[in-house]
Length: 81
Image 1 (cartoon, one colour):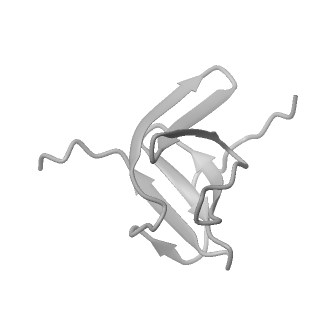
Image 2 (tube, one colour):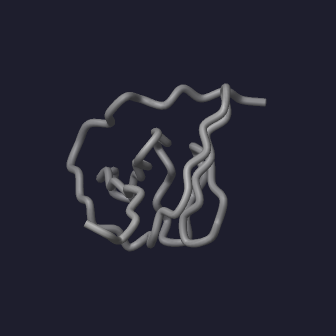
Image 3 (tube, rainbow, N blue to C red):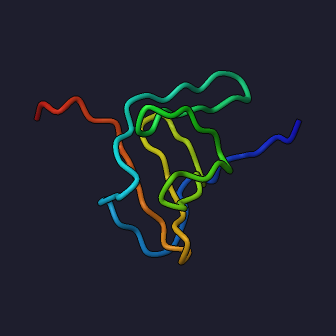
């Protein structure tokens, strides 16, 4: 099994809008980091339906790298502000 250490904050062009959809859950336990995006469970390195790759999973956000190398950020949101 391959172990991946997520970067603290990826660099590059960042956009908070996402075609990937909605981030609904994050689980971080020991060496395992999992997120739920568009009702699909993903881990670092997985590719989403729109072609974006999961670059990092953090406690409150997920960083995606699109096909052009641009970074996008999905955040957990309760919908209430």
